[in-house]
Image (cartoon, rainbow, N blue to C red; front, side, top):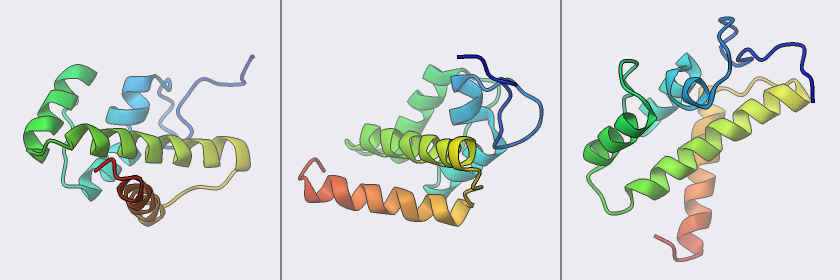
Length: 109
């Protein structure tokens, strides 16, 4: 599949959309992480950021929160890429909470 551009559509800063950018470095992703009181470090890589998330969350369910926020960011990215709809931070908050409730219903948490 060839795309017109491989740049991040969410932030529009002309930066290539790598997984690290999309989930950790993009200003939109950083705002999403702030919704659950987590901060990312631009100086650290993915693994180091996730280890820091574990320390910041201090819960045995830290990985569930990380996975759900990554899923939320991915859904927001796809909504913009495929449907042309910019998702707000508040929309992401609602999506994250919805997914959290679904996980809780399934007794994973």
